[in-house]
Image 1 (cartoon, one colour):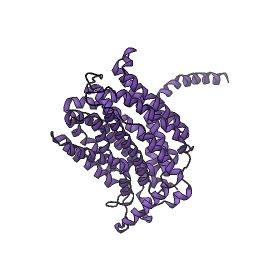
Image 2 (tube, rainbow, N blue to C red):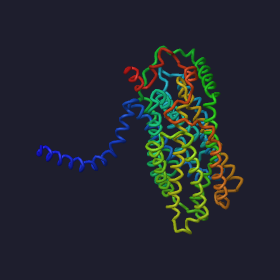
Image 3 (cartoon, helix red, strand yellow):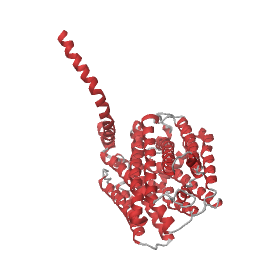
Image 4 (spheres, rainbow, N blue to C red):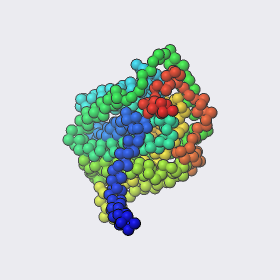
Length: 498
């Protein structure tokens, strides 16, 4: 007995000594186990597609496109801030017609596939448009806008196709809906962090047109996803039924959208986004102004956006591990309030109050941008999860695209509204006297959605929002006998498991 006790004591001590090491090791193992779990539940090709589309195409490619386009409009096309804000809205129009891309992916297969051909087409469109921008020095503004819009269309088509896969898996795996949105947000944040880090360097070394040439790489990887994504081929596809499928899908969408449980949160999402005026082009011109602004270099702008992307990453992590179980209405209240109040930091910056407190412009801008990215991500995440919960089975790609297009109409309204404010206040390439007033107006409007939260359901991410009858009535498929065969590999495994 005494010997056994003596043997147990050292073991107990060794366990206690190893506990800290195990805790540190878990910090590295948990993300790996999380990725492994998602790959196991929904097949590795789906996770790979999310990482490529959100992390590389929209993350790295989006960061390069944002910084490159800003300098392209400012230094190559030499447009005013208000004009750049309007042109930014024009290039986002392909995101507004996302229901069209979603409808195509749901009811119009090519060569027996619903998803893979659209990835290939999106990648080819992106490669061609970026090559055109990178090869022609004196490209007319109209042609440049068309090329930028075509590149945006390529990213939008790839986005809606992977969103269809996400929404589809959110319905079959409701307990993993928040995890899938966290995967999308995590991939996007990490990609943006790296993309912004290198964007300023490449703009300085090879110019904005050279950056457009680099963006052919993310577009090429989208083509690769189209060839790798596992999707069993459909047989006996009748293209005569495509018209009927379009009609049935449109009817199902309209029926679902008329539901009070659906249109009310949709209205809130649009208003909360459109009321947050976008004046970032004016702020960018002020950042790089040598007289009234901080006069940041190209590398500094890239580093600022890169470091601030950590804020978006922290927002995604915070939502995943601390906030994803909270009810939509209560979470949106606090995130919208913090989002509105944090905007006042921009006011401190442009009024130069930070210098009076001895805080350097570069350090303060990093803080301001990081807080803005984090609060915006925290505000955006619950709306994405809510949107996935509103999608009826059978047309999940189309309806999720419709919901995202409503959000993008809000972004377009915010962009054009911001351009209008910049124009009215006479903020130009060299004049920024009233930029403080533009910031103040934007911040006041950011808080107004708090009075519209009654439109958002009190449900939490684990509950079902759509009535069962509406979900059953809205099912649309191309061929009933092949419905299960067009799912991703994870769904095939779940059917076989039963």
